[in-house]
Length: 136
Image (cartoon, rainbow, N blue to C red):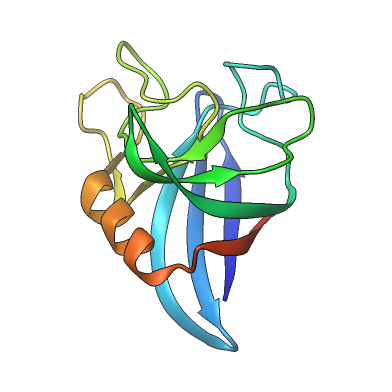
């Protein structure tokens, strides 16, 4: 399986479309949200585009999630549930948050992702223990 995130860089957040491919067939699709692109700065930026090894991981804080390995100059980057990448309540310090679609949940004029826990559960069920993540 290949997992690809195609990004759009906004001023306040990075929006993405995630696709899970099995050969040429799209097995699953969802949306992602991350921090804005601030040059890979810790805690304030999304991670750089590239190809990453990812493995299933159980976090004390986030439960079942995915660990993105070997991110340049960063550590502890996860793919976990959460809704907000900007505003008064931010659910990420550089991690990727999945959701079924975008919506302005907290009415702050920034997009968020919805149904993140459900989306994370679905991804965890279909993805293998280890896979490649392509961020473009």
